[in-house]
Image (tube, rainbow, N blue to C red; front, side, top):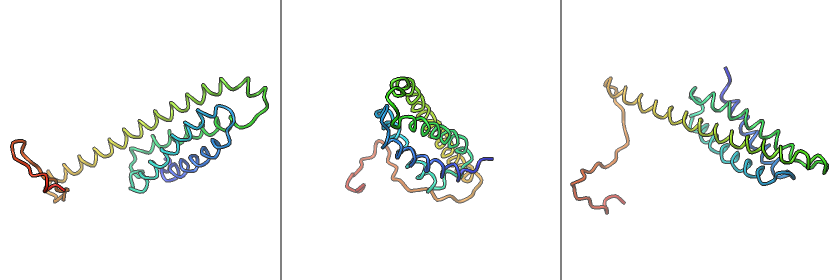
Amino acid sequence: MVDVVNIVLKIGELGFKIKTAVDTADDNKEVCVEIGTRVSRITEIVKKLESTGKTEDSTLRNPLNDLKETLDKAYEHIMECQNKNLLSKVIQSKALKNTLDQVNKKIMEHTAILEFANNASNNGNISLIADHIKSGVHVTLPKFPIYNAYDSVDISDMT
């Protein structure tokens, strides 16, 4: 079984490496910057998930691992964009751009799956609360004012 803490650490490490590699990329700079920006945002979100304890949920293990593997590939391909001789750039530039576009798309797909897994996990927590309520366990829920659609509401009370 893959250790989620190590996956999260590796995602953070890859995020830093990708940012550094993007800064020095010469070829396909635009798509490299786009990937770098996306990865930077994703690593911030993963860190937030970790700080709230969400990464301990087994539902997120596989999507996080898939994301880590794709970020590893992204790093490898961005490293290929580093300064090379002119002939190498001309021959590989178009193919490398296509590969980078595919990696960028995969990152987005893994992010969507991770979001879906996180939502499923949250819904599981809601189900757990509902089960506790049904079983008679006391659960304190946040209090929100509930108004009937026909009631007159004084909005000065809501500030």
